[in-house]
Amino acid sequence: MSKKQSTQTNKRYTAEFKSEALKLAERLSVAEAAEKLGIYPSQIYSWRSALNNSRTSVERESLLATENARLKRQLLEQAEELEILKKAATYFAKHQK
Image (cartoon, rainbow, N blue to C red; front, side, top):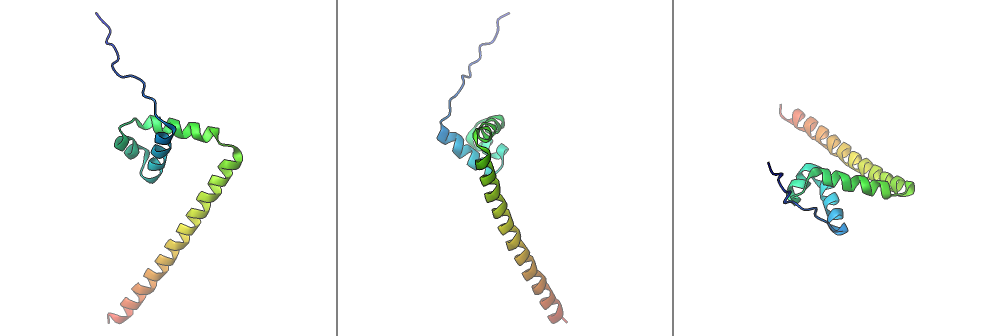
């Protein structure tokens, strides 16, 4: 009985490719980004983990603060949109009669 030789070799990806893959995974999802790039999702998770481990606590706090500000802006925008929709619904409900 002979053992099968692995025909797949370890691929090396550039730092630029990894960075772009991580950005794509943020926009879509890890699974979608991996499928689009033809790599395993575990590779993206591994790259993300390595990047997070290499950052200092100040960098992490800065990134979290930036993300927090973005989410607050998004929440305010959606609250404004909801308020506008409520006013429009009230207006149309009054004028339907």
